[in-house]
Length: 288
Image (cartoon, rainbow, N blue to C red; front, side, top):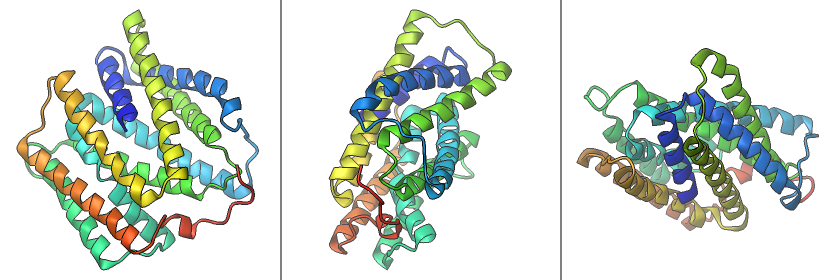
C-alpha cells in the first residue's frame, strides 16, 4: 500500500509539469521493460489464453485502462489525501460487487456496514456542497472500474501468471497514453522528471507484486484491511510533499469508511468466508 501511494505521489508531482498522457505512456513503457526483465523469475510471460481467460482479460483490461485514466486525471486536480480517502471505499465496493455479479454470500450485517461505508464516501464527496466537483466524480468512477478489474482478475484461471497479467495491463495503459499524446502535446523530459517517472514505475511494480503475493498466500479477510494503511501514507505524503491537509469532514468520512471496511472483513472471518469471489470462480486447470 505504501508503494502504491508513493507511485501516486510521483505521478502527481511529475504531471504538474508534464502532460498526463505523456507521463502515462512513459511510465507504462518503463514498467514493461522492468516486467520483461523480471518475468523469467516470476513464472514467465504466457500470452496463449483460453477462450474464457481471453474474455475475462478483456474485461480486466477495460477496467484497468479506465480506472487508471480516471484516477490519474482526478489526481492532477484533487488534493492527494482527499482522493485517497475516496479510494478507501474500494474493499467495500468489491465485496458488494462480488455479491451482485457472482451471487457471493453476504449477510445483513455486512450490507449494513457497506451502506454506512458509502455514507462515509458521501461525507467526503459532499454532493451539493462546495467540496463536490467533476474530479470527485472521476474518483468515484475510478473505484467502479477498479472493482471491474479486481473481479475480473479473480476470475482468471491459474494458467495465467501474475506477471502476464501485470504486463498486459501495463501494455494496454501505455498504448492508450501513446494514442492520446498527439492530441494533448509532448514536452521534453528533464532528468528530474525522468527520475520521478522511473520511481513511479518501480513503486508500481513493487506494490503490485507485493499485493498479489499477499492475496495469494494470506487469508483475504486478514490481508484486505491492510489496504487502509494507504490512507495513512497518503495523509503523510500529502502534508509533507504537497502541503495539503484534508478538512475535518473528509477525515471523518475516511474514518467511517475504514471502520466499516474492517468490520466487513471481520464478519467475513466470523462467517467463515475466506474469499467470496473465489466461491464463484471456476476451478483452476493447473497450478502456476
